[in-house]
Image: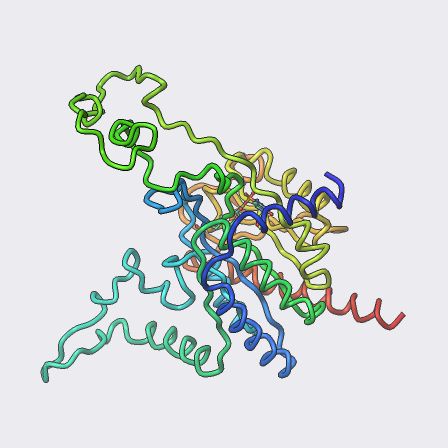
Length: 373
Ligand code: PMT
């Protein structure tokens, strides 16, 4: 696709997909946040996190979703804060958040960490106090210093509108802006003109009740099939199946690199399930979009290993210790001397963020020297 064709696809997408209601409010918050930190000469990172949904109805009852809980994004945001970055956290509503992720309903339920003391007051169990205190201090420091801005999205449309708005606000930061795209972004969606207004029915009840859009319901709807669509047969007739017809979502990385935030450093993630193609797809993405870093990860090993694919350097694998077997990029088991030793509790983001920050230093230095010439 040529540059003008992709610009047209982008314009058409944004013109036909309405922005989220909160866009203006979020933009105002992001603008104030960015100018506060730019005035303090602080680096700002936009971290995207969690999965986008694809609604199947305008009054949405059903939608397509994906697996991402937002672990990568929420964990990365904490390490960016520790590294001194101000963080805009563009995340799927109700997905994991920095700091509170340690005590989500599925990991450590907060109630299990509390007890009642002899005076009938609620207290933290002494055995858990130290680790909670550590997280609490970091969380409170981020809040006190206004270092973390939380912006939620739900649908793919919300996400793209929000991403474009925040990226454009970050453009004046030049090379000190960092965009770290860890969200799991839908590749396909139902365009608005094909979206059903109301909940998709499993019967033709609406047509039967209101033949030819009659204003009042028809009295004769005794046909049992209308109300009972239970069908034990695996050979369900086509007329009874829900067939979803999806269009591709335009790739927006090109717009990001060329238009929205052209001087910032852009890091994208590449997710695959087949180890044989991960590095190839990551390199292809880098060459196609001409950004600065692709971090490749496999669904099954994403918490323990990632690969950095960047221009003019060798691919770099980062790994932390974990229980269980290891595979390399081709799916072959690692030799014992290749398996990283160390704390099995260590999070891979503890390696990813310092390495990204180092590349960001280089990016800033390179941009400054180019400006001086
Ligand atoms: O939340 P966790 O469970 O911790 O999982 C983290 C993660 C696996 C989701 C994360 O590490 C990750 O890999 N995120 C990227 C997932 C993804 O969207 O991969 P992709 O191969 O579909 O897309 C690659 C890149 O293209 C992404 O940077 C995406 O932002 C971009 N993209 C995607 C769709 C689209 N229409 N336009 C795009 O530009």
